[in-house]
Picture 1: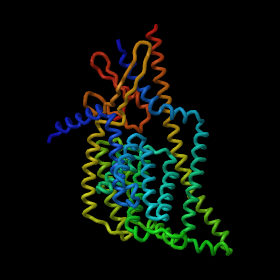
Picture 2 (picture 1 turned 135 degrees about the vertical axis):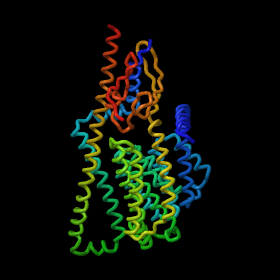
Picture 3 (picture 1 turned 90 degrees about the vertical axis):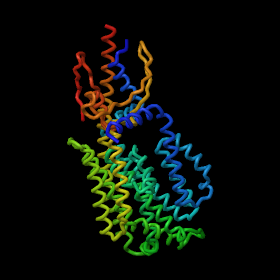
Length: 131
Length: 338
């Protein structure tokens, strides 16, 4: 005799395990702060590389002007301007990263909790059957 | 054709997809890759090797077997191969664009990269106005990013094609290289039509998403209408602001076709969520189970069942969506969400 409710719960648990279980497990294995810091650090690296690439494009575009700048007093103010732009764009990018990772962590934690509740439901059901 | 006939067609499509899903998915990826590769060949087919039809078919067969994210990487490499044949400067600029996309977008493990691949195809068919609305209806607001990136990449390639004579030719790396790079950067930065379209698409996706999530009747229909209006207003305002020419007839035709597509999405999505068809197997002490789980998504009133949520909802809702039928014919709904 098939227990259809049990099959339904087992199916949902199996679907979750197969699709997202492994990835979600990796995420919740971090403390929330550590996961957020990991995301922010990664974003800092990728943003810095992207900024460097864009800076190289800018340098190629204004090549002659930059060569003249190297031999003038305006080099230091130019570098300070570049740093200001870097920091100005970095803040919103990190903010977006923070929000995405925060939402992702909380959603994942909910999913994992739901999965654990399904397992508890199955375990309770098994004990009832044995009894 | 009455509504009952449409429901019957919908049911037949659902049954067909259920039955042949294991063929349809790779076939779909194969066809999409093949079409994109031939579009690239037609627009920027500078590399004779990468224009070989047999090679394109082989690449498409490979794309059929890999995840969608890898397909975008393969397409990117093919584009770079063509641009390198045109000139080093074009290849460098193309590599920079693709690198920036990788660093700033793929960083967040995107799940909607299919939209990025569909954008060039949609632009060719003049139905690209459907993409931001579809993204808002079916995905999260972050799906605005791949649509915008698709517009930017397509715009970049259009400018390459339009200026291929100027950009072609090799020679020593020197002043000519800098001039070509400067020209390419100028065409990207000053392509106001491209930037306006990308911005309008992002805003459209966000507006559509916000409206369709509202707990009001006909939220999806209102979202589609709002999205379409946002595109008309945004594109018209943007074009007049920057003095860009806007082809009214093409815009009208494109929006009409896009509305048809969006209506079709609304009609099908409420009843079939193909992405959630799952096959799993497991065992307990008594049985082996081979289960195919098909989400039953219906409008309220059909058999007393409630619509299942979208893929983006948490599985905390899974239990709530499981409608329990108690003995005696009374139906108990363990929470739920219309």
